[in-house]
Image (cartoon, rainbow, N blue to C red; front, side, top):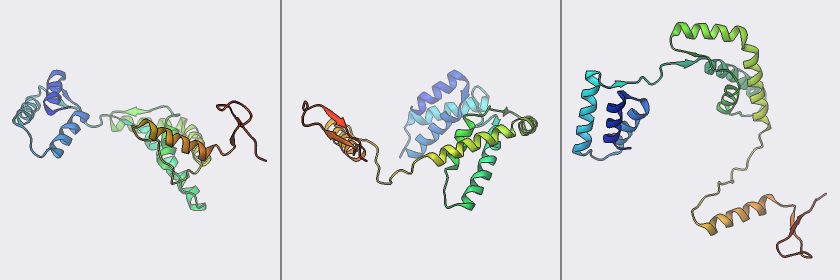
Length: 192
């Protein structure tokens, strides 16, 4: 989106969102030189911000207290496991898994956050620990993937087919072509 479109949207809505602000900043940082129209749009935006016609929305007007509680529990459990074993765990995956299974607890003031924290510690601490434990168990069950693995890529049809063929050859080692049947038929065999 261009600076002019962002400014027009902000003037229309009356708000400059953090995403809009970040996009304007990105454009300004990456452009070698701004055009006259871009400078004029930025000037209009600055004037609208100064007069109150456009209000800049703060980056975060609220917090989810559950995020800090689940993350604290996850850090504690992961540190305990990593200190007693040679395992390395992905803290972000563990916290995200737990948070997706816990109720959000938003607050807009520090007093509200204190209230939500005490409420969660009293009534939800066991649930938080349970969901973090589930996340850790799930993380431990994930297989270790080979570092040489690659995502299927390319816009050329033949290249994608070659990659899929190579993937099948690598992963389907129990697969053999049935020479007695049709050319297109295949059967899976079991190797004991």
